[in-house]
Image (tube, rainbow, N blue to C red):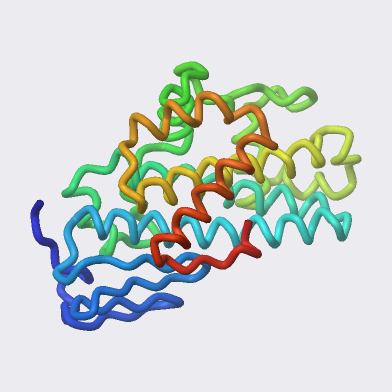
Length: 245
């Protein structure tokens, strides 16, 4: 496996950024809710896991905030956050599963203007196809009352398009099923968790997708699979904050 100096030009022995620390000597990657132990002289695949874990933990923080917004009865802010959550989860899964080695190497240098990944609907369609649910992205479904794709409606909210400032005066909860969105977001995060946890434990991607095909639309079973994977991580000496589940 090709050796890859993590940090892309930064000193390879010790690299630090927000909420994670990497030691090539000693081999510890720690980031947020999940801590991953790796080997000395980390490979490109170790770095792939690190990028995915960054996205996973950021998505966890977004989901936590979205749940708080739901409890505070702030649907406008919830929908703005939902757009970001969708981006983080899809892009994190794409980097974990489909990014080439060259695309992955660029991840440390990408800017706010360069995400380094395909379009959001393309990534979503790739995930749908991998789970056997079709080749089209559900994000393209038209929102009743707007005659626009769902993701475009969220995009307008995020960027403050003129139509977006009309939303607070509307009965948003009659246009968007917020309780269902909360449940769906939790399920999508569990899909992401299961992919990351099982890849850390070296399960082949094909086996993980086969597992997901049986539980992706069954939240209780999905939750159980995530708990099993988290328990396996812990048994293998990889600390994880159970409260994030």
